[in-house]
Length: 346
View 1 (cartoon, one colour):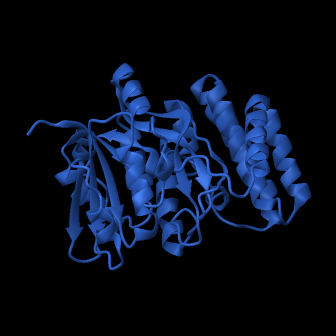
View 2 (cartoon, rainbow, N blue to C red; view 1 turned 30 degrees about the vertical axis):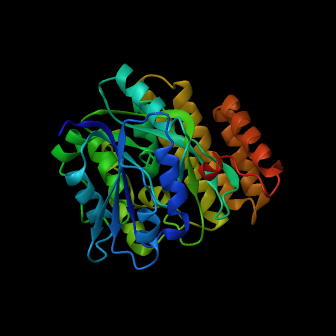
């Protein structure tokens, strides 16, 4: 059998409520030559029935007899996929119709890039767009962002299957941060990039993994942050307090800790820029968004602390600050019934 250009890999466990819309958003892509490989990870709800209602021959379903978890399900998908490239999506997220077309065009123009992501829109459980999640574009800015958190959105990536298989696939020791680990290993050996366009709509709700922050998640992320620190700052020794401040960026923490975290963000940025030789616009924009992320943590509980971070973000990159502010205003002003993209209505 000839190799298809793209396999879209979707692993689902009890995702019947949102799965049909996610599947539709893939099958209505303007890039038509694809297979959609769904790994039904031992679902006990109506997931199977939802999939049986899809008549498109590009859909292929494999069912785990018991729940294996996301990491093992994705590795099964890597083994079974027919595509040269693997694109990811989760069962509660949606794709812009041109997502794969735009990603494939970029990869054709830059064949040395082995992993490509994109920015995204955030949606609430009802499908209303609530904001944006914008990411660094260049390899250098991605490596800087990886110090603090995963620089890719798992449902937005497309990667070369052979490269990931050579790396051993997803590391099954990671139950939550398997994607962050894979990007860390991949970026150490290959060029990576993100498209600036928001090509995925990520649903946030109380049960979503983007909201969860378990002790295991914190432990897994801390291991990966240490690896990315070593890659971004070779030879530098980090104190226990510095490592603690880096870990706090992903967590809720008291405002009394904010000055130390914010100062470390600026200090490490200055060191990174000196080592790289220049502060590109993309790097400055990434730095701006880090301070906005800190500001967002304190908007509801400590307005002065949040205002300080907003001011730091503006000084880092005024143009990016304005872009983020306009996006936030537009999303806040949208009526409650507004949905940016609903594949069921196409």
